Image (cartoon, rainbow, N blue to C red; front, side, top):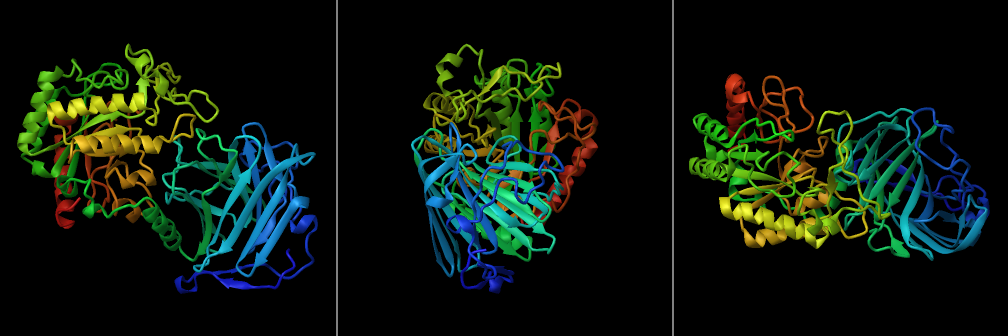
Length: 585
């Protein structure tokens, strides 16, 4: 431990937070310039006792400084190698509530080699008792990532992005914000220690960048790695991380509130009922009807005339002015015909589609239509016009989109590619296709499939591109609202409705900001078909009175003909729920 005066800092006493020892007991100063001479294998099971993540095959030096009862180490990673701090070229300045470390040389090859470079960090205790820090780095090559390594956090079950608790035991785990596959909707990880205190780890972002959380188990606690990436399109040789924060509290809600207060301020998140970009009808929804059209194979669940029959019948069960109709599979073979976004012939063609929308709106319904925001078929005749927007990762490799088995051969199909809304050609194409449908058919809302995809890439910030698309459409079509899929926190400031709610352990951070309904794959009454969605079948869940998300009823091929009683029951419960909420979404 560092040889300084012992000082115990009270962590958020007014909030009932526990105490963190700012320095630990006075002992002899460690060697190597005041840093603890730790290695990558210290304090963790080597080899892992459970599932293990990839790591170096040797004990890589991780010289660490002690602060507030935890140990911190830092690394800078280029596109070519990993560099740690040379502890013999470090200065450390300490005050009662902070410590600053600055290193002027870096070591690589497991400490066998060294080179010039800068890494500095200042850790401080806030007035509320949180530990906050940022890391600066500079090397003579583009920086890929900057890592903070934290030792001393307890083991326990983990909640990611305020979602359900998981106990990973001895398994090593890595999680990322805001990655598409299993990604976090906000950069918050909370560990519940055996002492029943809750330890929140947050990336306090003002611009969306990857925040990676790795947990490596040891006998006494986790070694936690926190990785920040600058924009890969920037290729900076000097970079500063977002601010990181660790806070301890006696309950989960206190930790979550601290994080989401920052999120609301950083992304300027409004109260949902006060949102100017949420039309009045969106604030008075009792029900969503998800009407499934044409499957990828061409199978038609409901053509446009059948959908109109469903809406006429439903209008006798509930006031259509409180119902949004979500049209999916309207544009030909689901996904196969992306990115044309033209009315499909097998579901009835443009005449039938226009009749469906016109008569539905006459009844009082609001119509939302589905578009794919980040996917396109690469052998579509028009693809060469947008090919420059194909998504590349930070290394310049094409980002794969072969994760769905569309044709039943039990292997993912690669005809689709991911697209990048930061690139003008794709953003302009999508904007004009949405504009065409909105203007020709008087659509009320447009759904952006997979808009929650954000990948660090060579061509630009996908959040900025998404926001630009939404802003441009808002200027042309005031009152026509966007709807997000896989929404993450930064998008909540400019997209007022989401497909699937977030933050189940702290739902006010979702429902106080945006409206949410059930996913496209929400199973239909009866056999649980997911309609055009690739999942196939799931377990149907009836509407319940206290559900936070807007009740959603999925209509597939047999829902209207064989499951009408279940639908009527769901509608009746949705009406009761709506009345109990005072007629508000």
